[in-house]
Amino acid sequence: MRVAPEGIPIIASFVLVSAALSTGAVWWLGGWGWLIVAPLALVTLWSVWFFRDPDRQTPDEPGAVICPADGVICFIGPAEPPPGLGLPREHTTGLTRLSVFMNVFNVHVNRSPAGGRVENLVYAPGTFLNASLDKASEHNERMTMVLRPDDGPPLIVVQIAGLVARRIVCRVSEGTRLRPGERYGLIRFGSRVDVYLPPGRAASVRVGDRVVAGETIVARAAGVGSAGPTGSAREAAHAGA
Image 1 (spheres, helix red, strand yellow):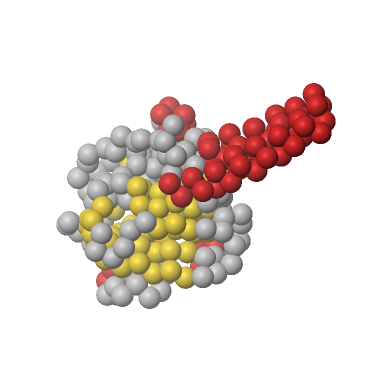
Image 2 (image 1 turned 30 degrees about the vertical axis):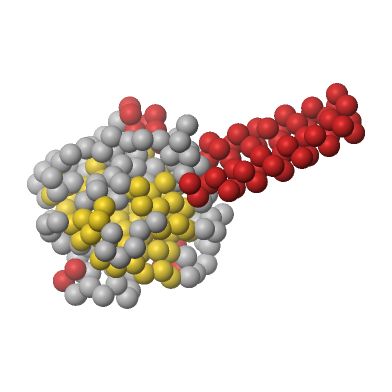
């Protein structure tokens, strides 16, 4: 199973600590030591599972916005993006924010919602409120990426730290070119990713839908399709992954 590279040091720490404690438990407690070994082994396996990074099949649909995170759609509505992005006013007004909430059971690797060039990255320190709350967009620690597609207005994508999360990873830099669905970052533990849809992009999901990073189309050009039923069978299978 593939794991995110950022998780390797953490997994290694779990392995070393678990091995040391397990050896000591068996040495001092004999057969009773296995009562300690078993939960330590489970915790170590959980650390591997948490940082899993499965391959995804990204749809090839012109103008589509691909979901950047596994989880549940928790908000769709008009909103202004974070300040300081260096964009003209016409690219920061009339936007629709689509928020994906990730819990500790979801895959936490983030993927690009479209193909294009990273135009700007803006980090903002902040608090660690529950990421499902609307005010987390304004108050929580976040990393904002402005992605300039090959055609059309820019897409604004925001990684937001949550109540437990304390580490946002953004692997790209300004000028990096991304493919649709390409891995670009990760947020440890429960967190959220917001996508700001420009005018002319209509959400094709609804609040409560389970979505899959790199696979679910969350928005299309206006007039192309509409919000579908809550989650496909494939999305439901992945959402807890």
